[in-house]
Image 1 (cartoon, one colour):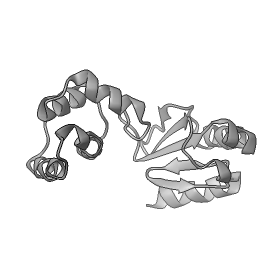
Image 2 (cartoon, helix red, strand yellow):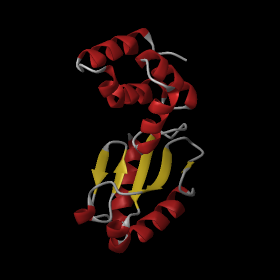
Image 3 (cartoon, rainbow, N blue to C red):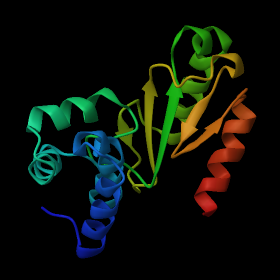
Length: 157
């Protein structure tokens, strides 16, 4: 496992921006997600070797953030916040709706590989509960109708 020549050039550009190579870890992990699809143990080891860090340093950072998937995910990653504000704002209804609509549970991917659904801790949008993140986009003040509209739009893309 290694970066493509194009990704390696991107890596070199990223690390040039930081006086301490370790500070480049988050953008390099993003590059890893774009290159490999997720941060596996093997990807973590590769990035650690490339950056002169230990594997545990890299994987501990990758595992801390939900934005770095640790396993293969679908084309669209749907993350629903389940922290207190969202929970009280209606997250259980949204979570149950997604489970029924997608016919999967949290942590699973649809058989067609289109969607991975994950119930996660705080996504930092407490005042707009319930909310979900789809790929890099936030969707707030959700209703089941809004969720259906979002899913339909994603299926067409």
